[in-house]
Image 1 (cartoon, rainbow, N blue to C red):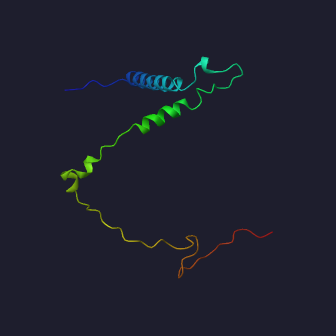
Image 2: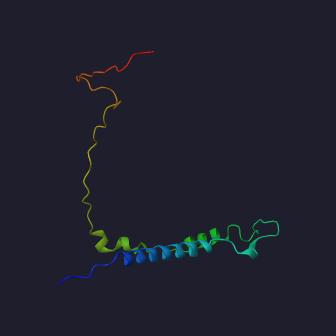
Image 3: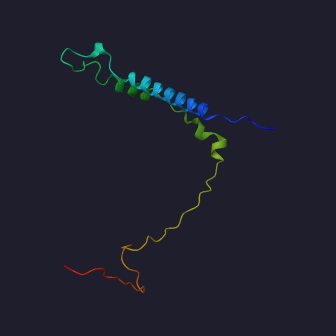
Length: 115
């Protein structure tokens, strides 16, 4: 039984549609970060209430977080064991990796004449 092959035209249309959706969502997200036209003063500077208001909102959200530490006293957490393996220190390499290796012969070929 043969399966119908997807045409090139269908694939191109699907890729273009996905790219357009990604571009749409990218610009929708960046549009919310721009200040509203009413928040600008007549000389073009931001008003004092707008400066840092988003940072203060984030700071208030962070300060209101409460972490439940009862997880650490749970018997299931207490029964966990550490199976990590210590990694022994390894030697790092040669001080100058571009220096010739001792015991190896190096030959240089002179091509052309000097000045």
